[in-house]
Amino acid sequence: DSLVLSVLLGAVYLAARTLAGARDQLQARNAELQAGITRITRRAERDHLTNSYNRRSILEMLGREKARADRSGQVLCVCLLDIDHFKSMNDRYGHLAGDRILAAFARRVRGALRTMDTVNSADLPVAFGDDERSEPAPASRSAFGRVGGEEFIVLLPETSLRGALRCAERVRLAVVRRPF
Image 1: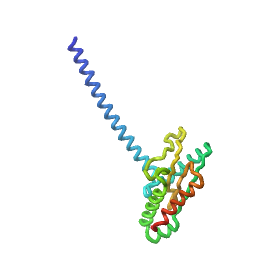
Image 2: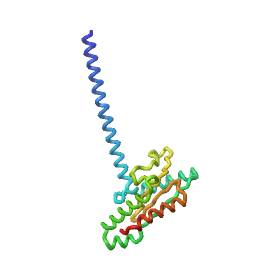
Image 3: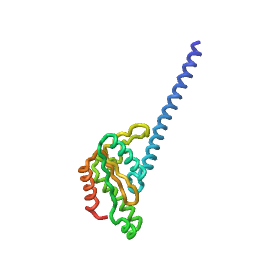
């Protein structure tokens, strides 16, 4: 009897160890898959050239922030940015130079947006809510995106017109201080 019991306990122990190992492997694999999903999601929502949010992402954020501002009565300011004479620079110096100008412009804008205000300086995602059924979390930070060509948007939730004007002036100064 005790031999049978010992064999059974040994078999149960081995089965439990095997299951624990399999569980640990599944947890590690799930973590890898989640990291992969996060990377793919980030790539899908970013403009590859400027590392700003792409048109679809920034316009979705704008829609959610507008709806949230309407519900809450909070202010929402939006800065529209357009690079003057970009087409002539692109035509004169070529598309590669134009791409470099767009990337440099985006870096300057991100640098002008205060790190406490912006997600793009630290490359952190905005907490706009991941589940469409749930209430989106307030952004309380600006978001910067490219809507097309040389046109960009900065979303400024819960920012007064005066604050938005100060932000726009910081961006303008960052761009005009050094020619491209």
